[in-house]
Amino acid sequence: MFFKRLQSFRFAFNGIRSFLRSEPNGRIHFVATIAVIIAGIWLHCTQMEWIVLIIVMAMVWLTEMLNTAIEKIMDHITPEQHPGVKRIKDIAAGAVLIAAIAAAITGALIFLPKIS
Picture: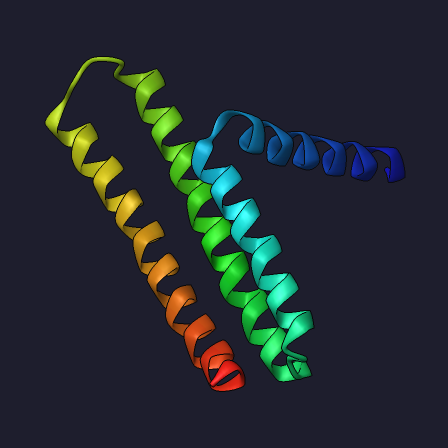
């Protein structure tokens, strides 16, 4: 039982590693995450600010990884162009955009007052 749990963690980390290696947006999110962490340390974010930053960063990562999974599934199911597939992919990409906008606004609300 314990070894099955460990194996599931290994599969999950393999998925993250695969995402970072194969997806340019994953690498962009990685760099942005490091930049936010450095800014949070440098600007002495409070515990509550860290909680909010972690939540919005996770939200962006989650939506981007799910968007990638949806795109891969749809490409596997229907490799050729299809209006229904395009709509599904556009909706998933829209979810990432909403998460990224929310994260950017959150970052601005936390960081801008500290540097003004």
